Image 1 (cartoon, rainbow, N blue to C red):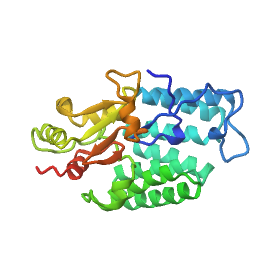
Image 2 (image 1 turned 135 degrees about the horizontal axis):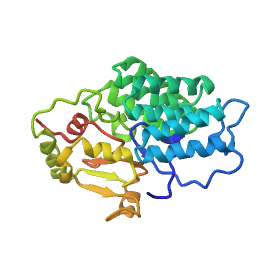
Image 3 (image 1 turned 60 degrees about the vertical axis):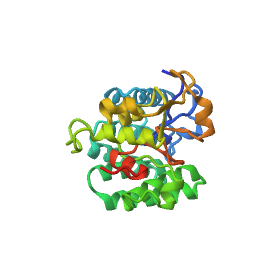
Length: 286
């Protein structure tokens, strides 16, 4: 495990953003302040950061426990609600995730990451119109707050949601918003023809598609799991210098800062993609 820590205010449901931070100070930093007057306690911040590390490792139940303790100590800790929502979502408990994002938004109505993440859970529940509304709100807030990078992430998610199967959409070509995670064991698995994953993986390799990843990112593991045994056919580049056969210089050259990120036909698509989206973007025909 690297020394990196994911601040949950920039951790999307389906993509890991690496951010090097110092150990928590006795008083909360600006990135951890809530909109309410009472700032989180130092112990609550420590628990929140522990929860973030556990999300990295895929220990979602443990993360939920840490975030819950942080909320018990500091009931107005917006980021802790966001983190707990993300952990619930990764477990496939989308209604519980939405409740936590709702609470974060109630505490801080302009908290853009909560809208961004809630949109993914609405989409998982088949509530596309609510997902679209949340993505539009996230774009508006990120743009107003001067965060063009995350505004672009939300724009791509919106483009993929409104125009499925349209890989040449300008918004898709330039943006970088991750897509929903793979189904959890409690949900029906996608119905695909036998050996579909192997055929798609072979096609992606043939067209030169590359997946940029890190060994510590849970979303990278979920992306790989979509391919099953066929994952060995993919061209995967390790971006963390501490990983095996790492190529951090190549990742930097490609402008990769979130994981996983795909390069397909010369275009960059950060975030986890479904098999159908990978097929559409790469021109794969069943």
